[in-house]
Image (tube, rainbow, N blue to C red; front, side, top):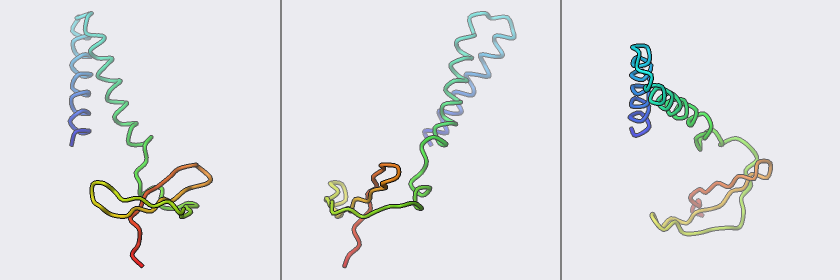
Length: 95
């Protein structure tokens, strides 16, 4: 929701800035430029920071690390991907 609102506001700022620039307002350039930069950043953010589901495949190894999640009280297990160095946390399966 917040991401969508930011994208809409940034696109609106870019369009208004470009329109003002075309109408002859020389001081509208920063407005258009920042609107476009923020819109591109919001669109690229989704691509750059992949969701957790995209990392399901791969060489995830279980470690001996465990901890209790302070928010839910669930025991979490730490998984490690030796190829990328990433760590992932999942609820520990009940035995």
